[in-house]
Length: 444
Image (cartoon, rainbow, N blue to C red):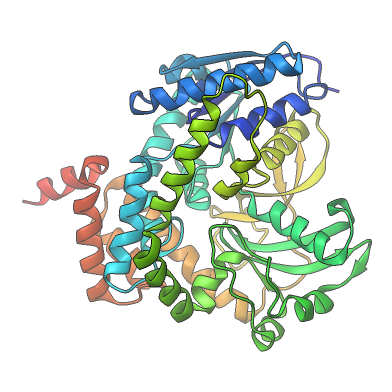
């Protein structure tokens, strides 16, 4: 049982997801005695931060917990002395996400927030900001853990691990969501389901599935074929093909639909673009409705409408991880960490997403017991190479690395198309990419 009070800083505290995190902190207060919860945002997010902060204070007051909720625009004061720093930020806000999604679609490529050209653009904007935060943590809270939820989580985590000394763990709600979906499929509690993961963030495979100690991998693959519900809210629910699953021998994560069903997913995205706009535009409407709810002075709980936002189980994943570190639990959770030889076909310094033992020192990867087969290894190594190049491009403003990253990505895969996409994305996000401007000016 943890004894000393905790300080948690949330960078991007004005996010619509924050009430779910606050709920989790309240529910687990006995094992996580949070004394100070600091929500920090940028000036453009002040209005949302004030709305979310007021709701957070009402939630804490209703629960009767002695948690001080502080709001600030001063990131350094928020980080000062923190035990955990959570990042859930979006550089360029939803307007930038809309460009990430719309520009690739204009060229008839998948337009998605974390995958392909859209995820590439988001990584270029995001990684420098995360590394700035890491420098603050190194100075002001050197013993803190950085728990990163910011997408693309795998590349952001890899950049922090390679270019800072901060104890960084990347977190995604997909593994915990998949576990709960499989539990519902078998009619058991989630605690009865054990999954072995192999891969990287948003490109991972469940290679072994056990329910109540019984290996049900083959049964699950048969039942998953054509099944609805085995996906995330932000990914079209196209059923898996039975022959595809059998030939892989593992359950692909929801994001694999962009690779294994590329033509169908592109067609679906183009149709949705005509009918309702980009996913970012849909999320804008959902967020506007949520913040109207959050303004209600009588509201003192997380509203159920938040589940429409697509971030289900965010709080559970985050609080589980923090509690296991704080209380030295030595349990197993699926997170993003430095490879260190756990997946031998990937570089040691790559970020991977696998089962890890969580203790007071952080997350320690457990090498998967099932071999990395060629059908997994082939796609995994190509996308990881793309991620390595993208991290280098983001850190150094390296156009050559950026061009090669897009060229080798399976959802682009053409040098000429990559050049056009790169030029358009760099121009669209020029305000957030000063490193590229400096490099280009240096060449002239």
